[in-house]
Picture 1: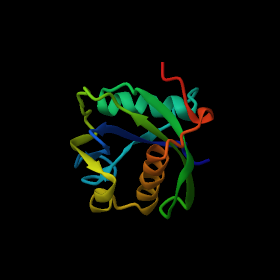
Picture 2: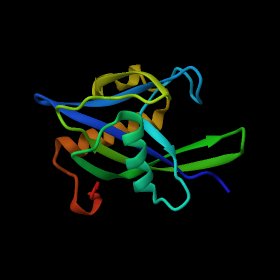
Picture 3: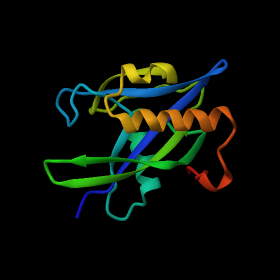
Length: 151
């Protein structure tokens, strides 16, 4: 049985533009030195949305203003285990006065506008997810059914 994984795409608004929080992985963890969004494994007894919220808090020290399900999933094939992963994706708007507190998994972070994410992310589906999120935000397309009470 494959592990259950989640991705969370934190963002905030500066003036009239949306910026996405990317985290640079530590040299001692999986995906070392890569720029990524928040992510991790679902623990026993957790739903995917709960795992995403927990991972967001653990990796950034932040609570979201708005937390919602992205209507696409991240998928990729892992040849080492011959597994196709289907990863639930969430978006989390962080407060403007946020202070990012990185955990041991990360060594740096950057706030990046959509037009620059291709310069940081290696995984095509993660880039597509940010483009989808950005489109939904820019046209006020986030529907009520996607919103999650982040308490």
